Length: 254
Image (tube, rainbow, N blue to C red):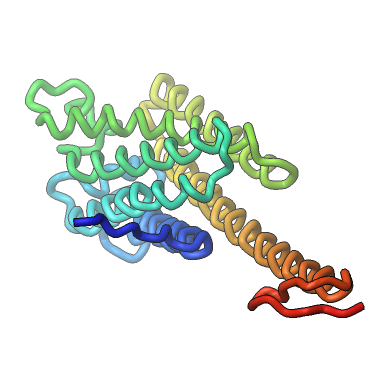
């Protein structure tokens, strides 16, 4: 039996799917903002956001679900982004970075910490910490690295104000990492919650810029396509030969 050849989805549909998934992921990535409306018992100044999903938290499932949803959306956005991204190494690295970002978020949601990993000495070096907690700490470190690597990859091939936005986020993320190290070393981890939340805000801003970039190139592509069609029809009707008008063969007379 002959196999059925399926036509690939139109480019506009693929791009729209990527944008939709990125919007969903970006909205879920901001799920930690719900702490300002819920009585979580977590200090936004001194407690890192991962404590929101720690065991025993009153709304742990809410924050785990939000992070997991964001990760799944970013992972699902990677295949359509692979078709939309420019065909060069930096473009492919951007898609890979997005997929890794989503994978790490899903992993962290699936392995919640036992407690706050910075404010409690027991969480830092306790022998009774669960495997899930240890995995969460490792994944959180990898995510901190990803917050720097992702914007750097974008800055390598974006141009103009888009590159400026990516470079600004790189600077913010590097500064945040440095502050976290200093606060952990000299300030008993105080104000690490504030710095960690600045990291999240910066990444959310970059995601919004990325969505705007996709929408911008979509509009540009639509305008160019319309221009090409009009130009082709104009040429068809003025060359004085038998030609086509885009719908079928028709004779043209000078």
